[in-house]
Image 1 (tube, rainbow, N blue to C red):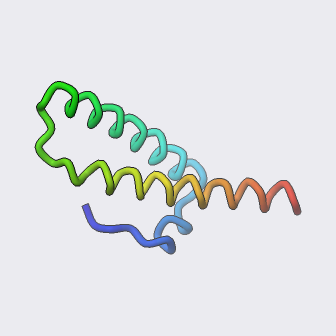
Image 2 (cartoon, helix red, strand yellow):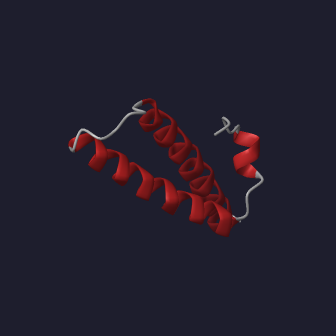
Length: 70
């Protein structure tokens, strides 16, 4: 998976963004479950997924705030 920049995230539509947010939350849940059962091999994926989720949520919140203030 290539590293996404903020520009890439901002170019996503609202529906694509919400789908990605939902998928990342599910992935983080699965990663936590695998870690608890000692089946997780790629521990670096936690940081990547959390960072990507934070970027998506930040842009999503910016959009919602700009829509309400306009």
